Length: 365
Image (tube, rainbow, N blue to C red):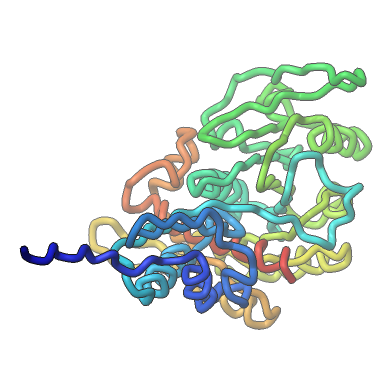
């Protein structure tokens, strides 16, 4: 009578081994390892198969691929591992420096997209960044605060939509239901007035309208509320900078010296009201001719990079001048929704990821 072959039971993998392996993986921007930062969730072990969920600080994390590769590499050092699955979720945090009483209900972060002067494409950048953040999985709203020159209805193809609906809260307070388009919530004075009529309101009326857009719009729940600020540093821009619970401000400029000179004034305005600066975006940085592939620096070159270095601020991205960007803005189809080569959708997405990362770093500072 022969002996029966003994089944190889293999090496049983424990949760302790999983956590020990992942404790060697560093969070590349915040520092510290994923385990000590409590970013590891829902560990599942099935024989040699391991599935882990990593909770990021933003769904738009620009280093997601790096984190995934590092986690897979670490887990495969455990004896007996045959398969690794890494999934992601996100928990967007608010800047701890913002007082609780100032927070917009249900809104985690408010981002000002500003410019020292008009004509630099600020509204186009704001709309595309809002949609790009939504494409990454974030809950996003867009507030068109440029009362005297609202662009959102045109940029998002929503001209003639009319006034949004209003409902009463249990306490009798009126709340505006924001429109939704391309995955984001949005509101603009352009929905409330005839687009051919100028907005000739005085300061108090403008301030009252903006307060309604901040406090009497049903924004919740949002990870990010992107605010398309009025250009310059006038009363309306200053009032917004003072009254909004801003996680930070992003400045849009072109390479031209006339534009970068005004950027300094806008940054000084935010500094005076203690709003953190998230960085600079250079719009219309250059033009690539579609027929020859030649590059043309129509508005000069290097202006934003020099300014970022002088002011010790990050240059979050350079967006080229593209015919599809212009056409999409006119047609109500933002660049990030198209795959035309000169729409530069991936450039907008890269800027959005860098923006989200900056906000995350500030939230944990």
